[in-house]
Amino acid sequence: MRALFRKRHLTLRSLVRAMLLGTLVWGLCLLLLQGDSSLEVLAAQQQEVAQLQAVVDDLREGIGTIKAEMHAFNTDEYVLEKLAREQLGMGRSGETVYVLE
Image 1 (cartoon, rainbow, N blue to C red):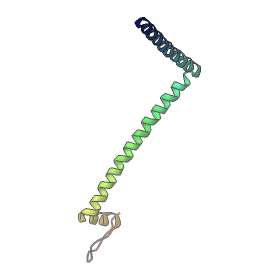
Image 2: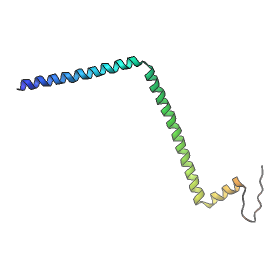
Image 3: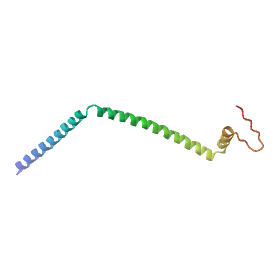
Image 4: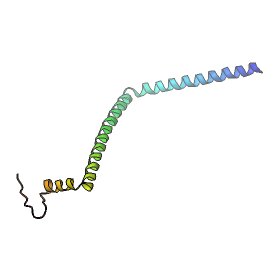
């Protein structure tokens, strides 16, 4: 009985090895048939992903800056007054505003 079990075990192991080897050979054949263009496409796509990730990082940084500015405008009266004076040419009542160019 043990001899029969060992024989099946070796046969199963051989079958698994043969399947793995066949899969490997099949994969290599597909790679050779597709040629180097698939590797070039993959490299180009990886480069594009890296560039897009850099753009996303820059945009997230910009969003953080804008959120900080919005928070400052909503919470600090000095920042809001400075913005009104410098960019809109506004002043308080009773003040005379001179615009120099």
